[in-house]
Image (cartoon, rainbow, N blue to C red; front, top):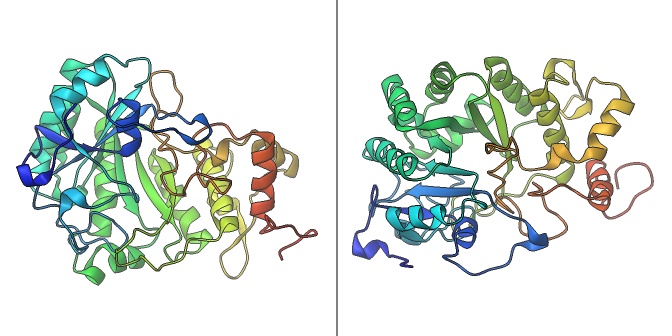
Length: 359
């Protein structure tokens, strides 16, 4: 096992960075998952000494964040670098644990062809489906066709922000970054055309200044296009431009999680929800007993991500947007009845205890 440093100039397509959870799953790193959570998706990230040219205000990999790319954290953990061939060997001996591989691009021109090459190597070596988290800023429709030809079967587009104004503020002109709202949505539409409905979707992040109404409308837009949504809670990356930005309130996040689930499952629609004057969800537009049953199952509060061949979420990103502990935001395992009771209290803003309303 060889962990590498950027100062040796190892870079993609022969080398990639890997999430700490994935490194633990493949035996590169030692560690214990809280509550015996298990990751079934090997998350890979392209790597270059020059790093990412994107300047997204919330991202640990931002070119505007100080430090060498190889030492920058992402989702608040280190992503060590390993050789592709070594990763393939480890996956081949752990087929019972690995149900999917996800390759994440960064904003760098050579990442386009390198993503295709890495995908081809993986699909020709291991019988595991491959997803791509792509950078629309770099891509044309023909690249999507090449991705499909290379063996990818699912595509993610990290739109992240719920409105064009917030997107520009945190990813585009507001930070002198290269990304454009319209291009991201156009690329998502192209992805659905190339890979088919249900095989492409968008990432969104709650807590960036949007209202719950605005986030629900963005999620509904993706659903109406034929896509799915994977939801995150903002969690500050140290030493980033948004290091001091607060987390979204837990009640807000729980309501949006429930809304996303209802929309993606086709059980509800954003235009049937009721909102107060501040854009906060007041009613989900379905019968109370039906809503209670959905909450009791706990599924809306689990991590949403690409599935494996068994139809279960493989990319469950344990503790990707909150630290391990009682205040898990995305559950990487089925919530227990005790978890659901806590979720219900959180939805009311009562996790500390209150009598029938907000405290």
